[in-house]
Image 1 (cartoon, helix red, strand yellow):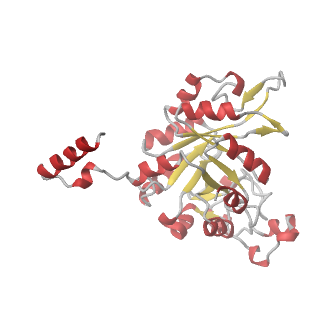
Image 2 (spheres, rainbow, N blue to C red):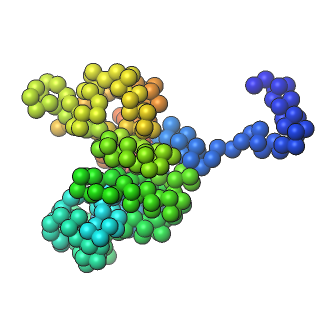
Length: 311
């Protein structure tokens, strides 16, 4: 707008009894969040999980203290309908429990030690404070960080977690996380994302994809759930089909050490209004390469390393 016409607009606004603030409307928090997705986001994968037990309060506290843009967690539902932050479908790897997480009530899960395994796996990082670490509920995370953080939440294995979408949206609404621009929901499961979209169309969604060699022909790549064609065959229309419901793509960039996407994939997705977030990148040289490709963010277990590079 030309200066003089801008001046006229302002004076007309004043004349009509409208304050100038309506002429220069500020972005809502949700609009600001979407705008921020165009710049670079540091996504703390299960918190600062390179330094403390994944998905623990200790890992989240570190990531938050260092200034990560998003706290990333996998959300699952307990036998009694509570939402908890836990990655695996089963308890063995990161706790002293066993069996499927969904077969246990919250009270049963709260009895588990989800920290000692980390001390055993990483003796150089072991800390007696990690012993007895409890599984967190989503509410505990929100109660701790509130609107002082942003959250990047995955609907995990929806087929094992029936009702997780409804439960998640209900809690996001109760904590007023959506209109305040505090949350992204991610999933590999397109149906799960569409379910979220039906429940509340304002929630920004990220479609996760995983590219790997086709079992029948390892010269060809394939996307795990078939949500897009192979990166080499992907068209604007394919990206646009995702952009109809999602604001971004979360993708791997390597498989077995071989790159599966390149800078032109990133640029094409962005041309079709999709932010590109790459998971899970822990080495500084890889971080730098992807920053140079122009990605919009990285999932990392070491948010401290990434923050040093992007500051």
